[in-house]
Image (cartoon, rainbow, N blue to C red; front, side):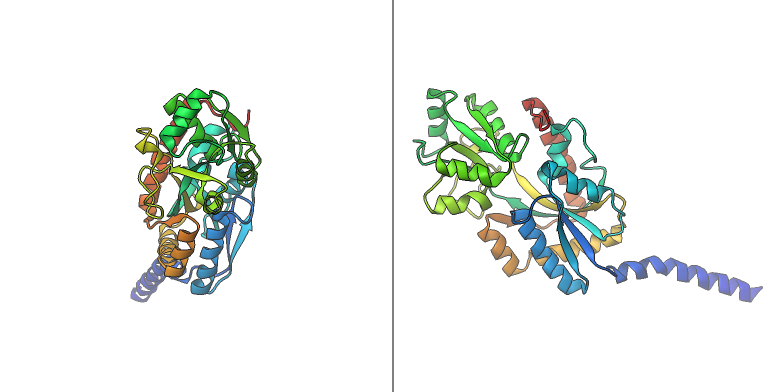
Length: 323
């Protein structure tokens, strides 16, 4: 009888340590990292940097797979439906997880409930730029010019409901200026037509605009974050002229809802280690992207806060991406 009790006790101890051993062994096979946009963008570049370093430290392949379409919804939905075992991850953004719920009449996932937040990765320096033909050297002069020429400024966007669109619509609401929206199929053609002068104004990530600012083909008026970017401390914010204006765009790493907290924590620590590497930080700085550090809990709070904030804003502005 005593031997049976000893056996059962030993078995219970063995079973109790199995999950911990499993967590310690993770990952035991390749990881797929989904980017819900086309290759070549800043999100894709960041994902491939993470994948390269994670592959080296984990000793397992981390494969970046682009599943683009529907403003990031296709790739994000794929991850939301995946097994929450840590082998299918998503590099998403503020738009996919906080705005799309309000922008689309029907959504294949909930941006908050259907995901496990792992780490906030980076903050994109979002810029307000104009074609050099616009006689404005700052935000105040642009507002004055737009009011003198109602409906004569066309602003470009990467499509209805994009962060470019939302940034400009918010600016219109806050200032009372009347401008014309010209949506494009992606950020690249929106930038090129603003450079060419077919559109006059664009709110877009610095990764896309700053090379043209440096060459003199675009004029940089401001950034859209609440505070000046540490990457461009001499550039004012829109909010310095338009009180209360602020729109920050972040990237984040997610898994499907229900992931084991130990695996989430392991991924969080590894991602934060990579983002702190000098060579990674420099590459992101050169792109106009500010790397961040966060715990899963901190990122979860940011996600919930911004889902409420930007969801309300989209509804107030009356923007729909599928109408």
